[in-house]
Image (cartoon, rainbow, N blue to C red; front, side, top):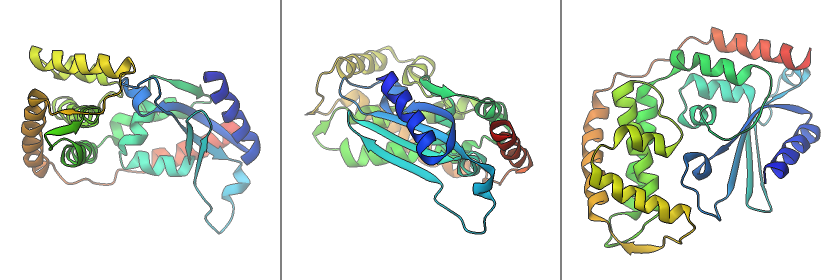
Length: 256
């Protein structure tokens, strides 16, 4: 599948007259709990030729395609990506930390990683992950019979909240790193590990009885972080000079 993904990325460059600076796997495959039939969620950052930017009208700054073989392609134009990075957008930061990199050319992604500490905002990321946990918990995990795989979509973001609170840094993309660092309770870890093995092996996790240990853990964590989030200082917009320079220097590096 990697060969097909590389071919599609090259096609996009030719078709749209762009350069793809960085392309990674996102979603369950990057998080580490994909099943055998999970989609391929390829995300990328691209840059147009300099003349594309020298016009008075804004144009579309993203791309999306759904292809056969469950291949989902989506990209952000560089300026859009930099604006989201400035706001400490968690999806953008997860892309930069993805363990599955399909393409990384030029210096842009590496320089963004170097700038991440300067632009990381714990409030923005913690609110994002708390909202994800809360939505999955309320929508899928409160009934007596629950969609078992949804536990992962609540556990990963709440463990990311733990990471952010204790380290004041962006949480790792990989679920197992969050488990290893944030879950100290042996019984809880055994329950999660068993569920992870079932999902990764291709077992269809449909509706099953609610798992009390996971339910109680998530309930307690949600109550804690709903109060904790209220105490975080308001977000301030950081300086943009470094990102403006990165944009200009990327154009020069790629096209000149």
